[in-house]
Length: 79
Image 1 (spheres, one colour):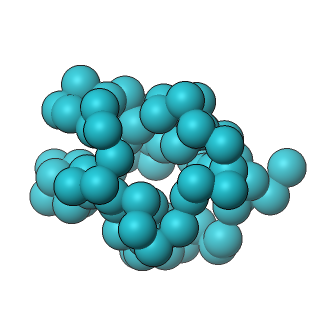
Image 2: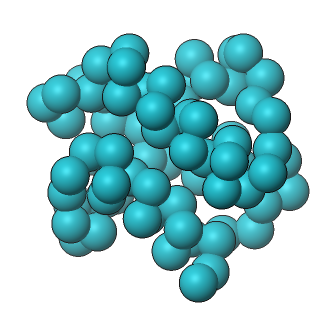
Image 3: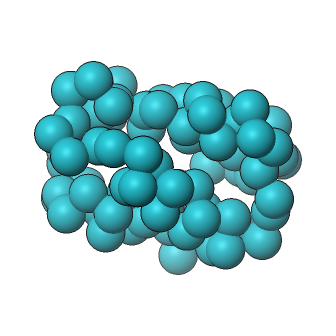
């Protein structure tokens, strides 16, 4: 499974959506149920899956699908 597929899988699992729902408009303002608990679940799953430790400011910025991809790029995770 590619890194992008793994990221998509995490988002799909945490938010109970199909991969087709993911994209530029998938963020904490437009997704019902995106709260602090789900955001922590999301970041924790990302850390475990990609074997990284996110900086606190990166965790706070994990507010959209696009931000997630940009943050992973900072950690040299190719998507």
